Image (cartoon, rainbow, N blue to C red; front, top):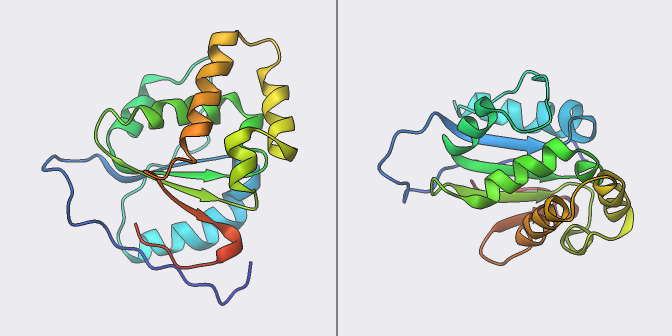
Length: 172
């Protein structure tokens, strides 16, 4: 990513009249984005704009998404899904995505396709698809279909999405 990239952040004026715990809940695969994209771009810009975002501080993961993560997702005005080639290698990321895609609290979902093709995500093909298939091994068909539906959903036109090949100005 070029160092001359810029990030412009602003919040929609049509927010619900409720109090949010966080402005943004970022969902991402740590190894892919934590040190480069997340820390150097988003955290810097969020801090500069005083945007309150959920940080999991590498919470210990169990066999399900715990109540803290569910509450953070529901309590966030915007869910920012950073899809990368290894996102689907984590059942935790996939379970977060399922919770996000429920959109129970009326939050906005914004997707960034970080060095992964949106069609590979939607159709679970390529390297993304390989990671997804490996994660699905040993899981119930119901669980796999729930993940698949959430991944297909991030490609819908009703959800804002940005591809990293178009760096980089986007609006929250």
